[in-house]
Image 1 (cartoon, rainbow, N blue to C red):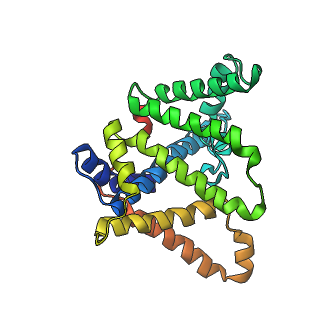
Image 2: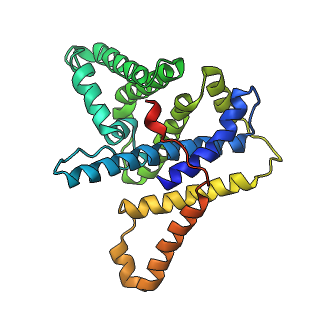
Length: 265
């Protein structure tokens, strides 16, 4: 939740420039998209974890809502890990009543696209959300059509994760942008390199926040085996390193608090 506040600050400049009709440099566009990608995850995942923890105090067990979605090797796995309660709702109350996969491949793909379009519209009556839903629906259909022809080797998994993460990042542009024009302006600049752009202090802080968030995320998700580290690294060094990461995270948080992102949905 702390880093979510800081990432909102880093994502704002590029989207504000696009909304004003100004094309942001490639580096600013990429950092803004990466910042928003992490902001929306830490914001909503942190809120969900707080809700789950608080409910336990009253003897209520809420379902887990996120399961390291950015480590998904494909877009189907991403939707099994991201906002899992919404994914289950869309499956049970839209996809299956529409017929699911019971009426052939063509009907299955139509049902999948319809479900994702309505899922996008559920977030807001804006063409950006509709296009976001269409985009993810198209990714799911493409994976269903081509997934079985793609090689599935363990050494390819890091590349599959990176490709899925990139595809999700591009989709978040539509989700964040105020209009389709703003979204296309950001995406267009992401793939047009600009030379001679100097990184500002804000951008350097954004890079630092991304690195810190990645390190903390992997540590908390168990990707780093802390028990193994404890046997090879003195406990005082390990504790100091983790405390240092938390301190850096606190320093990267802006002074003025930001509104919880999902209040608008």
